Image 1 (cartoon, rainbow, N blue to C red):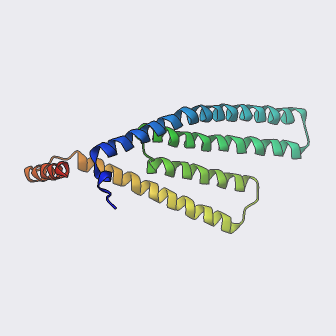
Image 2: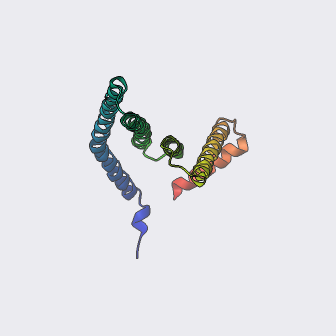
Image 3: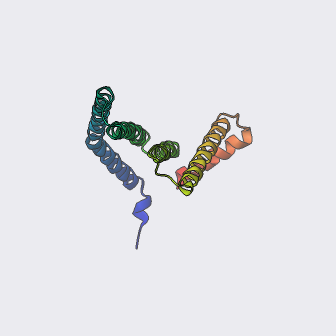
Length: 179
């Protein structure tokens, strides 16, 4: 098989153009859906808040009051997860790639949401909490390492190059252009 056309510059440009058109078309479809989802989530939160206040001021049974409060908390936490996912999608559109930092932030928010719900609804075991703790610790350490390495990268990029390094980079770039 002759796969030489895969390294052809015009073929690569066409593939990138098709990819960009696909991402733009997907954005045109998904962004209104995400916006509608966020608006509906806010509406649900306000409805749950009204229900909670209604139970509170009417002196309803404690079980109804408790259910309404748990539902309100659950939907508020779901809203935070939706916001994080929306940020990830906007990041994909802006940079044309998925940034690890955004995914880690969404994962941390999701794990914290689950911890809050499990503890709040009193349906946890010790092993559940240890598992969530280990997962949260791993996500946190990964996030910190990623941020530190990014800061080191920025320092490296802004440093002054020696003449030898500059010539080496120019030669490397010329070799890439020849291929």
